[in-house]
Image (cartoon, rainbow over all chains, first blue to last red; front, side, top):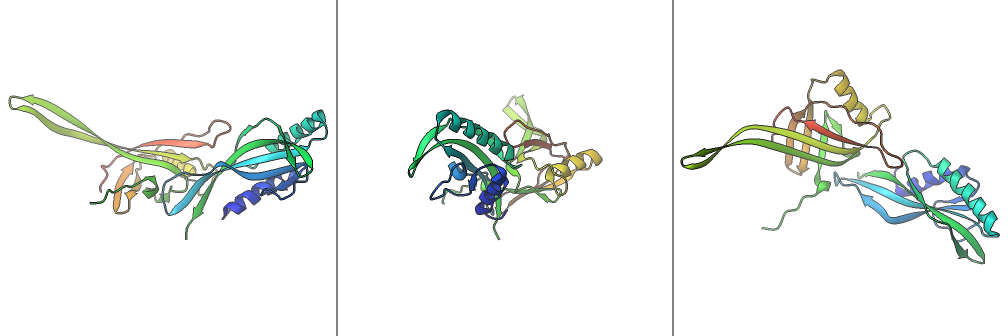
Length: 127
Length: 130
């Protein structure tokens, strides 16, 4: 991996097997069910040692979203999606907690979403 | 004279020729002196009888074989436990410490879901030269 874009794209590729649209960046329009990779806060944590090499811990939020048509159905679908995302996480990733579901409005539709915190380490050799 | 500040970003080091920068998150060289104190009729007198260096390294584990630093440390401690490893430790540009350390086995494993880390505390077998 040579850039942070590659890190996001590789994570998106690893998650491609889940039954949802996978976006390596926040999309303008979300088609549920969806899995969106966005930067967390803090986004990049410097891990020091050797200023000639850029070395950071990269924190992401993987947001799972499903259409909120009915409470029980949406929650059931979201649970299945989160579990499949956890199963598809590639090696080299620290997998954190899943935050509680919430309802957000995107355009004309309501989505039931939950965030999964993940992180990995990235080293950029400056030449 | 302006204040000089050096940070962890200024550190680089190699062990047995291997560059640890990409995996290391902390590296600290400490030299402990054994100082005897004598109470004389003229007051206290001090005499240093010994020094012992310790090189502490915190790093992210990189266990897959083939070029792995953890594997290299393990192999060195396993196959040649009494052959010192040369260390070149740069605290900041121009301040380079050279010394040898006794090989030790790295720890293996970690807790879910965190990244596996290795803590190493090398015993210096030669006094670091600056």
